[in-house]
Image 1 (cartoon, rainbow, N blue to C red):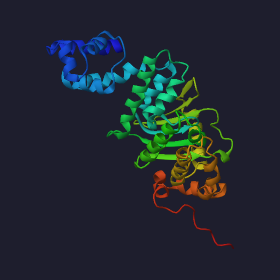
Image 2 (cartoon, helix red, strand yellow; image 1 turned 45 degrees about the vertical axis):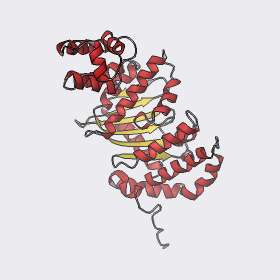
Image 3 (cartoon, one colour; image 1 turned 90 degrees about the horizontal axis):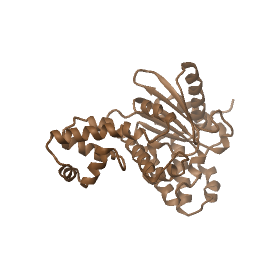
Image 4 (cartoon, helix red, strand yellow; image 1 turned 30 degrees about the horizontal axis):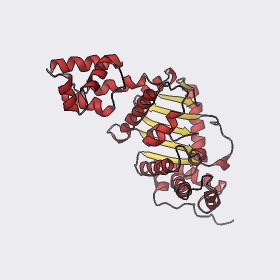
Amino acid sequence: MAALFGSRVRRLRTAAGLTQAELGQKTHVVSTRITQIERASGAKPTLELARALDAVLGADSLLVDLWPYVYREAFPDWSRRFMELAERATVVREYAAHVVPGLLQTEEYARAVLRVGLTLSSDAQLDERLAARMGRQVRLTGPDRPELWVVLDEAVLRRPIGGHAVMRAQFERLLDAAEARHVTVQVLPFDQGEHDAMGGSLTILTLAEGEQVAYTEGAHYGQLIEDPAEVSRFEVTYDRLRAEALPPIMSLDMIRSVMEGYNRGDRRDRGDRGDRGSSVPSRSGRRRLAQEQLQQPGGRQLRRGGPRLPPRRPRS
């Protein structure tokens, strides 16, 4: 795909009567960068460069459309089909067991996560995967943006990936993203105990045609599930996780609380654990809130301005 991208750039450049140096000047890169792209050598083009080339060469979005396929080659075979479907999904529901989902990661957090992958073969491949991950986030701000519902295991908040500064920026990113009406963030606290999705992350995609697929992933493997009966079982699992998690408004409070722990430099967050009781209701209280949340479209009333606990029923 990189070779195909390069051949299209060369053909369009020649048709436009431009030299490599002239094209580089118009797209604000050195001429050797254009040479690398046309020969499919060196680092692959970034999304910004693909857009610039497309605009200068009048490619009518051809190069931008090819760009995701160029980067997909940098990923393991088992993840490519999932990535293709995710780009077409209208609803994305994720349970994240270990790290913040890629659609909501900051660049520095993503770099720290990708750096430890056993499937990496070089720094260039790390840069390729990082650019691809950041490029996919554009969907969240585009006109065809999906509805995104994320349940984060508490472990995602407690593990300081990349250091405290990186985590603080990542929490700010989560809080900002959750302000959008099409993004919902919940936290599944440790005290909920065992659940059906332990051991890995789970994603359920709803496509424009109404088809649904599930995807489970561990550190170095992934499995796409397309059989409707199996997908339905994973939907039940996800709904249970969503019901057991803190409601959105309380989840954001917990994220802020843990972020304060990083601000204090307490690596083990001992202070936050002592403060949780004042903002996190009991399990029975959470279950009542969860039932209300699932009965309301998108849980928006609970996220903004609603009461944190339902009024007590009078004793009979």
